[in-house]
Amino acid sequence: MADRRMAYGGGADGGGGGSSASTFLLQNQRIPDSLFFSGSSPNFLGSRSMVSFEDFNNGCKRQERPFFRSFDQEENVDEEYDEYLHQPEKKRRLSADQVQFLEKSFVEENKLEPERKVQLAKDLGLQPRQVAIWFQNRRARWKTKQLEKDYGALESSYNSLKADYDCLLKETEKLKSEVLHLTDKVVLKQKHKGNTDPSDSNEQLLGQPQASIDSGMPSNQEDHSSAKSDVLDSDSPHYVEGHSSLIEPGDSSYVLEPEQSDLSQDEEDNLSKNLLAPTGYVFPKVEHDYPNPPTNSCYFGFTVEEQPFGFWSY
DNA sequence: TTGTGTTTTATTGCCTCC
DNA sequence: GGAGGCAATAAAACACAA
Image (cartoon, rainbow, N blue to C red; front, top):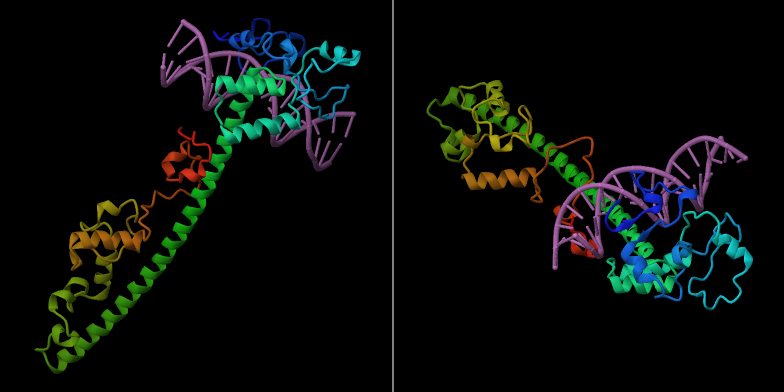
């Protein structure tokens, strides 16, 4: 048994819960709380204060009773209730009113200072321990919901980014085939011109510097298959390691090799980033099965507004 | 009525903070 | 070391379909 918690009947049953009706005696009496309580509240019901006034009248259906009524006011505590009090103790749910009151309090502040706990317990006719437990469980429920919410947000964000990415892949493919098509044309033209005027150059044909053409186009000595092979061969030494997690070897989306580009390294980096992740998002390794929900929503960049109680610091 | 799944109340053990 | 918080878990209470 823990130092601060007094369980019923010696409480060595390991694991939580474990309350059989016959062993319910001093259950839940945390020592400090019970000391706090004795005689401090007109609503105090002793070890029975944990009852919630529902299920009274022998009902199995939930039955609401006002929780503000103190026992001092309760002049005619009838025999039925007395009998009820002496039943073997059962776990009882709080009434809707009590829950509503607690909810309201929770929204105001999800942590419970000792004074507030005692005051709430007084108001509700519960033990402070019960109030504390309710808040603890409520925080756990809120956290679970928040995790679900975070997970949903992440999921939709992922889906939208994936859609963007797929779109860009298609676009890349389209541009690539366009490049090949134009390359074909250029080569044919060169051949044609070469037949008539061997001194003619690419520069004259295309009206741009030779280097520019060489950078992205296969020379007229190479056939197209080798050009394509160069472009697509991710096993070549030009394969960019930094992109290995984004584009797997052989991925046809990888079009230009760095050394073939006119762009500076920075420009290339920017281009790659813009092409692959237009929103600046670095794609994680794509899993088709979603990973476990996040355990810490702080890490996912959610705004503070999405964490209404401000205790989200796990 | 009963079986089953879900929710709520409560306990226990561990951790952190003062 | 005591107090309070949290995660994990038990078990009662409840909801609901068959």
